[in-house]
Length: 191
Image (cartoon, rainbow, N blue to C red):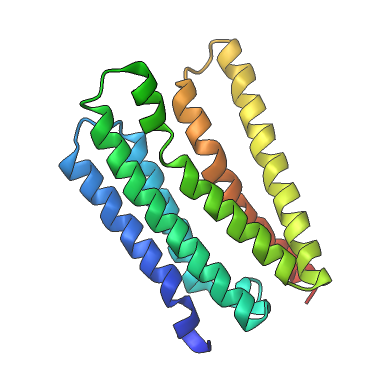
């Protein structure tokens, strides 16, 4: 893949997420405001990554690894969106606690597929790219952990009041977003 064509799948996923965020807000107004906001944030981050281009993304990998990564990530994101919508719709009508728990966990399976895609990508690149990935994920995990712990101290002191469900749901997207930013910064050191 060359030029902007290689970024088309990412742009398509970003567009799909934006449409999903708007549709979720318009079609299910009773859904908590954080759900479409989280989806919209994901769309913006993915869109920004696809517009940025450069050599610090998956284009440094062999073409077969790139194609598998894009395919697996796209499949995972589409699955996540579909199961998130289904879950939110079903939770409005199901009352049995065991079924509610199973329905609430539906979107978790595609997240596992996304994690697997990331691991397969990292295993498919050379040692330098693996080092960049490792440093980036360490920085992202450290920053999110630091922020989460800081928020916990502020919550314990009753300075802020953040619902636990909202805070927990933002951890993974924040790690992913900060990972992308950290990867760009770390990769510059190796140019």
